[in-house]
Image 1 (tube, rainbow, N blue to C red):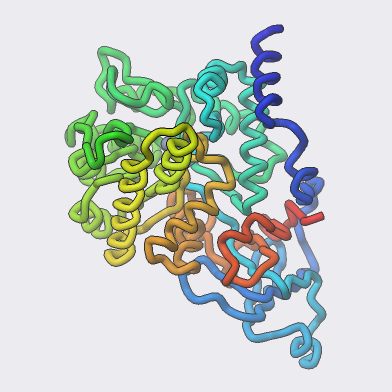
Image 2 (cartoon, rainbow, N blue to C red):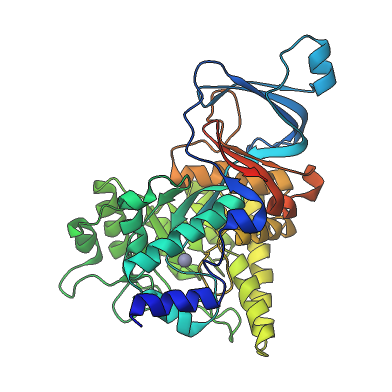
Amino acid sequence: MNLLDRITACLLKIGKFRGRPAESTGLTPLPAPAATEGRGMIVQAGWLIDGSGGAARRNVRLEIRNGRIQAIEAGVTRASGAHASRPKPDIDLSGCTVIPGLIDSHVHLTMTGDVDDVLRARLREAPFEVVRRMIQENLREHLRRGVIAVRDGGGCRGNTLRFSNSHHERGQPVRVLAAGRAWHRSGRYGRLIGRPPDRCLALAEAIRQDGESADHIKIVNSGLNSLTAYGSQTSPQFDLDEMSAAVQAAAERGLPVMVHANGEAPVRIAVMSGCRSVEHGFFMGCENLARMADMGVSWVPTAVTMQAYAKFYRQVGKNPDVALRTLDHQLEQLAAARRLGVNVALGTDSGSPGVHHGAAVIEELNLLMQAGFTLEEAVRCASHNGAQLVGGTSGLLEKGSPATFIAVNAAPSRLPNELKRIRSVFIDGVKQLEAG
Ligand SMILES: [Zn+2]
């Protein structure tokens, strides 16, 4: 059996690729439709959460033309709409909550959420054909939960970038923004998601000379969180001069920088360097949060990773206390970030052990709400705030914005958990998925 067959067999054994999500969930991917042109369509929504953080509105009519929202009118039921001799809705979602298409601002598409170390190691070495199928599977899982764009934090062989730059991405509706391989200091954490600069090159020079046509630059500036010593912090991988020069080199290539950083010093250097976003940010402290609010640096907190570690540790009989306390601390930081007005963008780190593509978005939304965010604010983190990192959309449902939304078969009071039961997904006014 060759390597491809062995890895595929391994994946089949654990349930990956066994049946398509469409068959197992009742959601049907639709054939690529033509863009809606000419005559518009009227959508009747039971509730609308528009991505701004404002309260859900009841009985909303959306008029859509050429893939964009032409008008929004609240307080119109099907009956009152008919009485006022308005046109009948083309799509009746009166039992549904409509929210913007979601953005997961931190994923690793070349990894799965499986905790089996042997499988994870094999996948890192797998041929591109296997990786390509896994990425497509992961993207289907995202779409099933209403995720319409993902921002990838890197892989050791840069295969997400290869996927997004190749024809393989065409025909699948989820936008992929890829870092390729992340940068880390030689001998420090980051080997699994990237590479160090060549021995003779400074980080900035390596970025300048790099030929990969990435969507953003990912730099690793700390270690991982300890799961055994609560609150222990690692030293920065790069100093402020190195990081500032790197951000400048990325800017010369027109690319924003996302920085993996935990702990006060690594995050302070990242923020002061002018990076676009801090990823994880465990134990960064309130001074850094205040600085981020002032400087407009986004935070992608990936709290669900600690919840996943705690669950896994319990399953294998290890002590989950440090992971749980770290999660609690992150939720306290989130509450502070909300008070300070930091741009919090939802990201899951999907592909980390126990963090599953798509499903983890629901868990992270729940954690934001545990930290004190309202449902509407949590949705904003996963739409408008994420859109500031991925571009191409405002992440809002307002007049003039793309008609990119999901309909969930439930009232807002049953969100975010009911994202498991999405009725349909529209991107630019075109239906991508429909509940069967
Ligand atoms: Zn990551």
